[in-house]
Length: 190
Image 1: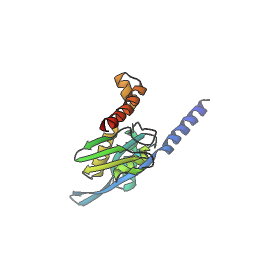
Image 2: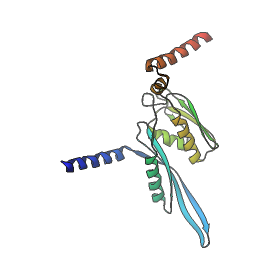
Image 3: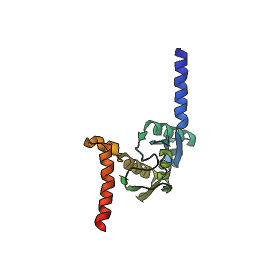
Image 4: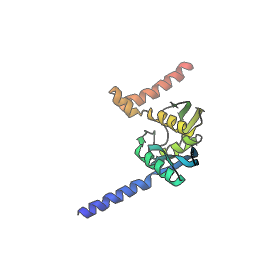
């Protein structure tokens, strides 16, 4: 009986590992000058996600590229966060994020738009499971800063359920109010 339970846990762990998607964002060759010459090493940035709203990033450094990627992947798996998605395909609202000199703007998009984002942001959205989003990066194009700015923006996203819980209201009140305010502003303009 105990043997079966142990095997079942092992199978569950392997299933969880299989459903994670890894994307290598950037590899950088780093040279350290020492007394005997230069020592070469490699730094890697990896994003990991389950394409259902969980995503994480990590960086690793080693003498060989595969070792650096492994270290980065392990760190990314440890640092995963959950992001609420609307209908499982886009963000709930427009949001901006910042890290250092890197700024990113993320906007919701209607179905069929696709992922309109460049470089490291595209990798984050693909492993996150976002299918429709428009994103713009302003300032630094350093992959480390772009990923951190993207995560800064994603962490500030609130779903209607989260907002309703904070305000002590029902989700229906929040969502209907959002739709009604849009209708009023259109009527007022006319």
